[in-house]
Length: 498
Image 1 (cartoon, rainbow, N blue to C red):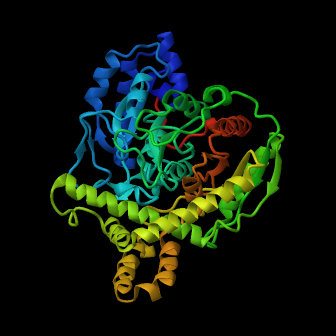
Image 2: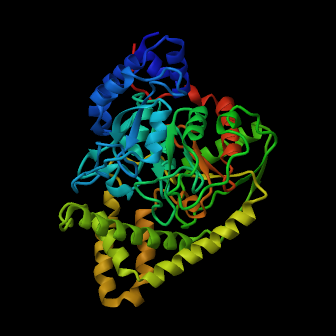
């Protein structure tokens, strides 16, 4: 088998095994990944910064006994630092070049991974489609007329295109799970505090952002989590330690689980027939695995809950933009996109008291959610309300222009107009995905699973949300569903390497 073919067919665990056996060298793997990156780059546009020469140099000195020795990898262009590598955050603001590695980067490198590029993101991760003025449109390898999701859309596109078998990703409102659902991948949003974001930040978006990866296989996600989890001295909090290790959980029979299914929209917006079919497919796989299934409702996860989430994110964006002004030493209004600028303006309009009250309401609802779903080992629910959208499809919804108008009107009649206008804004900007923010607020783990492909040939994943700190059960369940379904062998319909 050629190295190119091995890169296409094997997951990261499998490739590392070939390296340990001496069947493939790290240099050969990295060269094959770089060639694949360049071959697919015009079609998917998923690379922010190539790191080719540094990757080739690193591959020459890799210890072949490391767990993921020589495996090509990509770092997201947002929320993580690697010494000397420009981070753009999907923006035209001058890049930040760190003189340090993030703790997560240190752990990636210690595992033997070889970063060959940084992957594209929408500006500051604010959209669930990876499209930016700075880098253009990132496209779905399954159909390049459609989105790969966001904000880790570049990471997902690179994995789905066979450039790398696993890639770093982060999730503050679905940014791991949405791209995974759009591209036929596994995407684990970890528990709050499971993996440190330091020293770049100690927390992001009031603790709602977490980091991990998108991958082809469940076992890769589990192994990478074993190699990267655990607090460091700057971590503001830490998830409960696992009972064993995550890789062992991914090969363990889950036993008979009690699962719930939640199929309503928190926003009361339409859900496509394809999304409901994907959820039914996941439910059928779970039943085939011998699990008990119960339909539930979560009436308190509603429009007010999502509105409070949106307010806290807007406040975080406003704070981030103030920090960027200080970093570059000048106004950045001409560098950032309208969506970012307007979101920042909205965050500035909100008072500190409003944000505090929103956070308190979110915490109270999270406590209720965690308590009432505690009897279930996992809750199955959608990730996206519709199949992957056509590239550019969010623009006609007019969310940015609407928000500009809303803010102008709020300045004149803020208290009278706020509630109705804000509800309209949510409908316009969140109609693609209604669910992922739930677990970002509650801190629970949730894993996107590639259970379904539409008649049009587009992936449409669902998610299983677990108890706080219990990624092990999710990984065990996911691995069982992976085995039953056979989705691991499914690949995007791209040209297959010889």
